[in-house]
Image 1 (cartoon, rainbow, N blue to C red):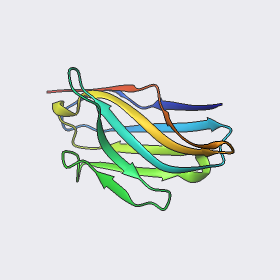
Image 2: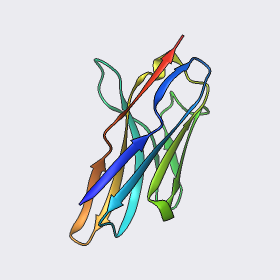
Image 3: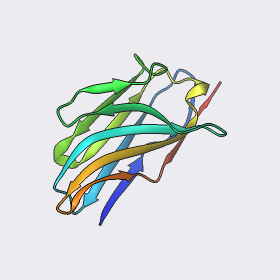
Length: 119
């Protein structure tokens, strides 16, 4: 079994910062892409940022220059540093990790963490 556990969400004022973490545990051979998604009320889930095993990153236009995704392969952990937060960043944030197990490659999701940015 594999579990992803997220932490770091909360309530912050506009202009503030938060750091999200997501750690995978269980029967893992290796991890390919790691990503962060978010879903605001009444909206579809959207990709915020992703990072390959080699460290190449990709960001949604709305967060470029404010958010930074990183990973620690030794800890099976992905981070999202969120700076200059805006009320429009309010959403539930989900991590996704593409995990290679002995039986194949599978997408796993974290439980979600609420980020609320007040104006």
